[in-house]
Amino acid sequence: MDNNVVHFLRLTSALNTPFKLQEPIPVTIELLASVLCCTPRNVKFILRKLEEKGFIQWQPGRGRGHKSGMAFMRSVEEILEEHLQELTGKGKIKQGIELIGLPEVNGALQERLLSLLNKHMGYHSEAESTAGLDILRITRNRRMEKLDPASVYTAFESYLIEQICSTLVTYDAQSNSFLPGLAHMWETNPEHTSYIFYLRKGVRFHHGRFLTSRDVKETLQRLTDLHSPVLWHYRDIVRIELQGDHRIRIDLARPNLFFLHLFSCVHMSILPYDVDFIHEPVGTGPYRLLDYNEDVLVLAAFDDYYAIRPLLDRVEIWYVPELGYNDRMYQLPDTELGADNGGGCANHSIDYPALGCRYIMMNFQREGRQHHPLFRQVLRMLYHPETLVSELGGHRITPADSFLPWKSRRTLWQRPSFEEAEKLLRSSGYQGEEITLAYASRREEEREEAEWLQQRGARIGLNLRLAPYSNLNIAELLLQADLLLAEEVLEDDWQWGMINYFVNQSNHFYSLLQQSQRDEIEAQLQEFAEVPEAARILLLERAESLIRDNCWVLYGSHLNKRAQLNQSLFGLHTGSFGFLDISRLWIKTGFAETEQGADHGMSNSNTVE
Image (cartoon, rainbow, N blue to C red; front, side, top):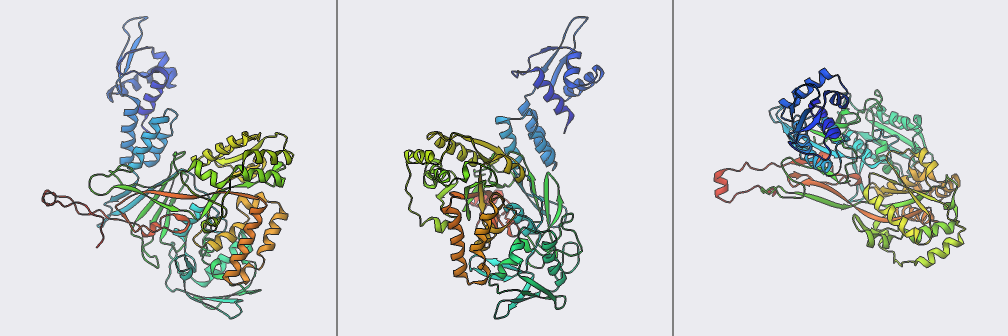
């Protein structure tokens, strides 16, 4: 960052409160040396630089005992906005984000700078080749977790892995069927105890080597070696036979009609056997990983991708801490959010209901009142889905009685009274002890929801303490919280999403249950993979009834997700977890406007012919 800006901020913060422009402030060189943490000699050098920049006006004191005078000629807001535009204009996004995070930047100023930053996000074209380089920059307000298919459990990281890697088959939600992926064909025996996959030829990994059946076998072995939390799904595999470089046979201990689901999920993203994915994320997907650090993740289009090469050449995902909103930003330059730029290229938002819901989990690993069934019933009455949606609104679109919206729509809601809840609270043996509810501090709606529940609890004497967390790990959570407010977003393959939610050892739900509860759920699902689809759905409903009827979880609301984008973005296809599929995005810039075109009433159009 420019040292002149840093020095200017230090001086204004220490000497000019409240801020006044062009009014001399009496100072001494010794005072300035203390503020700037430097020698008196360096103070004079710094002041000369600031005066050359037009930031200040300096009047040295004449004679012994006379103080010098310093006037600030420009406002902090003006200096910071100008410097941010200079940084982002040069592509120095990291330095721009650091500028916004300075202690002197807060409130309305921070919001204004964030808005300026977003104008430099979105689509850019760089003339690095004859055709130019199309880049899309996206902001996120949560640091990314480790990228590893074996252990991934968060939606955004799963989405990124799907851009870097490929699976043997892909699930198509529209037709509820499977399509070829890295395998162009597959077959099973009549008993569904053996599967053969036929791999495409000529598929390259990002590091150049061709895909073979050994990569598939080693990917499966890796799940075992790393004690993957999803191993439960693959427990019946008894033998893997390589029948050449492009054919692999997998034998099972018992029938499995759900097997293709297991090979289309992100955990079975095929990895190269000769590369450690943790240190070098390499796959066969449409994008290769160009850079990955705590500030930014950069994806570059893979020219040798076996399917259709992405139209965007590069995607940059920047971490902007505590952004203040959770919408995904796909902003284009020279446009205002939510406004038309006059040329027919207005920004707008895409809303789509997420498959899943927001809900509350009980921490059964911690001693407390949440172990009492009547107390959990009280919480169910207070955290009432229909009341929640009607009173708070926002992105909460419908009350939830299941992770699946179509099941929730069957519920007939009746609002319980506070008198009923208070009576039940006394019957539970509650003695006024503090109950801790944890929620994600970065999610504004979770804070709003937690405060709403706290107020409702106070009406019947429930002492609910709110504990916002940022990147709290599960070990700390188990020690601190009795309840956890969370969101679950399911994959398009909702059957896989549901079964994986129940048995995946890495998610919070599994971690917060006692072993006896886990055993009870698994007993319900023991025959899940052996039975046809209709029977599988029935088993999932029974497992969900178990956790709902016992109030192990309290459903809240189904959510509406939103992506902010420009109307010049085309190829808008929602992928898994509700994220836009960046491998299919492209930008239509339209015809350049001319005087002649304007005379004939011509303008940019979003129509594709």
